[in-house]
Image (tube, rainbow, N blue to C red; front, side, top):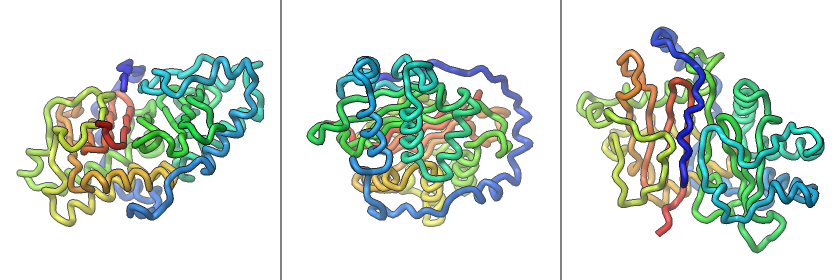
Amino acid sequence: MKPNLCDCSATSLSVDRRSFVKGMAAAAALVLPGRALQAGLYSGPSRTSAAETAVTELHKTLTDEQKKVLCLPFEHEKRQRISANWHVTEPTLGQQNFYTSMQRELTTRIVKGLCSEEGYARLTRQMDEDAGGLHEFSIAFFGDPTDQAQPFEFMLTGRHLTLRADGNTVDRAAFGGPIIYGHDQVDPVASKNIYFYQTQQTDAVFRSLTAEQAMKAVVAQAPAEAAVQLQGAAGKFSGIRVGELNTEQKQQVEQTLKVLLAPYRSEDVSEVMETLKTSGGLDQLHMAFYSQGDLGNDRTWDIWRVEGPSFVWHYRGAPHVHAYINIGTKKA
């Protein structure tokens, strides 16, 4: 992947925000769905999934002029690009005289189809607060979704969001490839920062560690946030390996995955869990908490990472939220 390291920060930060942390974990738990994470519990995405059906319908509405702008070859380099703030094509969905109201509605259906119910509510709020709404985002088609014999991918990009829909045609890539979310907030009050509950859950894992385990888990220097290339079984991973933890600690890690995956549709969750299973399961994951960027040196971690042979989830909480996710099987 070709990362774009543009920092879209425009927000100042106060270390005093830590005063909000205590007591938030219980409140955050109230908004998390109780979906189980067993591999194989759900079928993976397909060409007939809700999002992909809308992708095909949207593609069929495109005029020749729109196709010149929005439709790219499947192997186009833009499909490989990842950034927290960019537009895959120039026209935004709100551009007058380019998209029809039906095409905007179909795009809304795609986004909704890629999310759980609570995830769609979060993403909608994030798009509204960070960019002004879905109409400020851009879309592209890589390959032709109407061609049953070839892979395809739909991509939506904009400020703090990248989503993909591929009907599971992109080889060995959950979510169709790397995805991104964020929020232009650092305040940990749940009503303001819509992703702080994720940091609270990873902090619960850290608080369960012994002193010796914590020494392994804390890492001085964080990697670049967009450095989420899959390393495979031969990779070297920072932090503590989940296989070294006891049963109760592993349950906290499993709960962390459940929390992180909650915003996404069941089919993608299933593909993630199957991918994780085939690369050694939970025990092969590592969790790292970075002292770099630990505001106030209070060990309530602002940057953390869950990583294994087929899994990278990098979260940066300040100066505002950026999260980069890449899950799949490394190609030989």
